[in-house]
Length: 391
Image 1 (cartoon, rainbow, N blue to C red):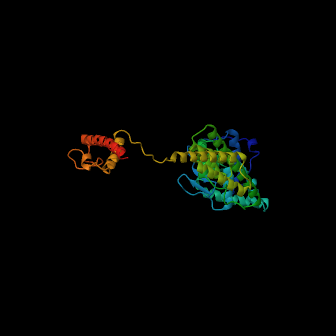
Image 2: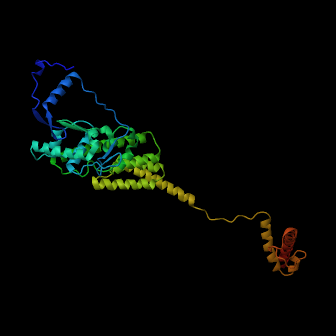
Image 3: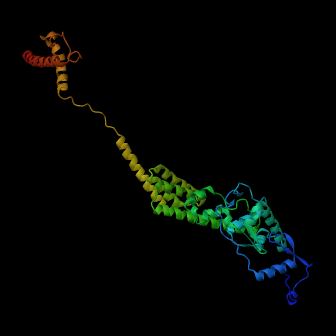
């Protein structure tokens, strides 16, 4: 059944053959009929727009690296990084905005600050179009825009600079992530324009300060909870790798190395810090750092002295001969002396069945040897009497 329309409802209608041009958000001029505009207005009054789902996917579909070498890859490994520097700068600005709307006029004035506004907006539309082409089919999901602003869906992207600073599951591994994602923020985009350079310097300073404060908080937490010395040393080394002149991290590293028994490395860490501070800031380490160095050096000297004392071996002394060994040696010397005395023959000193047997020879053993030693003792007494008689 055909619906009847009143004359009053058509009073504000426009001719159907009249068309007007409207600029789309991506910079392409499209021709839209006023009939479509009037229809959309009428439908918007009748039915409210459906809500747009904002849930985040299980995994990002694009990985964007803003630190160090610039990279942008899809989940299947395809390269979606634009070739132009201005288009890369636009992508970097949208990534650092973390999903918030960025005015088109601001991006155009920041990247094209030496041309009039209309020319800057035209150049921005061209760079934005290059970014859309580079993203390909994913552009509809990643980039949203209207006549005044553009924004990036950060839930669909993994961005290294945001992952390092963000309070997520990677918070426990921020030090490892900061080490892997090393490099300068938006590297290679200097000297695009004076306004962009000023903005870039501010962003780099803010990023550096935030990352330093987060790494310091992780290091203090590890030191406060008295974690394992090797774990404290690893966290301190990562912070030193990020800021070589950080004295607090150097002190914690020196304490951890001393706890692990590596005092020589702790002293070398102090020497490294001293050279860095002298070269960069022309200052000496603080009193606290120097006092820690002196304590570690003193403990090392004491340990070396104790090791030298334990390593000293006294000269070997001859053990006193006791019992039968002493008697045997004493009688052996007497035997030699008796053989030199006049009136005492060598056979008389020999045991039965042996001719001039030496008691120190291996053949002389057992009961025969004991009897021989007794005989030598008796003869020694007789020899002493003879000596007295001759005197």
